[in-house]
Length: 173
Image (cartoon, rainbow, N blue to C red):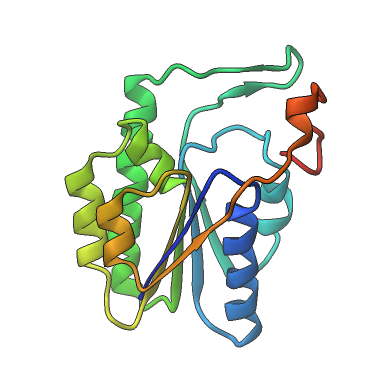
């Protein structure tokens, strides 16, 4: 099955991780592939990599300089190469009989041009029937929504960023 978690609200990755934990709780084989999340800026990495039964793979170049509090928005050829490596990793995992594979932020990589549409379509189409594939990220394209078996859209109703508050370590990263 194809599950898509999209929308402009906070909690897409968190929702996917919750589903991973549910599968692990039933003894299922689960993999989490992070797209465009390089560096040590993401707090969930510190815990997820300690879960023995969860296979975690991180791809992407560092985007956030915590000392300078600066985020790198420009995309490079290296960023694109990392996204391509992540897609290839999922293809390789298809041969290992996973119950659940999460492609975290793949939709963002598609929208940013780091992953091309044909590669993402192929990834979806080649997913084995016994494997459930979750894709996360903002602005899922219509073709993906139509193809999906389940689509959850997380909407922002209110966010403290809009009142000028800074991101909070432990809540936002």
